[in-house]
Length: 87
Image (cartoon, rainbow, N blue to C red):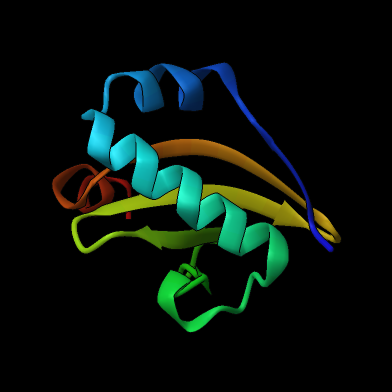
C-alpha cells in the first residue's frame, strides 16, 4: 500500500474545485488507496519528470504527486489546461 499525504497547496486547489469534481477526487482517492493500478485512474509516471506521477479524476481533471518508494505526496490538482501547463 502506498502512503499518501497532500500539501497545503493541493488542499487550496482542491477547495477551489466545483463540488462535483471534489466528490470525483474523493472517489478516485478511495480507488487509489485500494488499488493504485485501477484502470480508471490512469496512474502513470510523467515522461521525463523523474518521480512525478499523475492520476485521472474524471475526464477533465488530474492530480499530480511526487512518488518515492511507498510514499506519494500530492501537490497539485486541477483541470486539463492547468495540467498541460505543468507538463
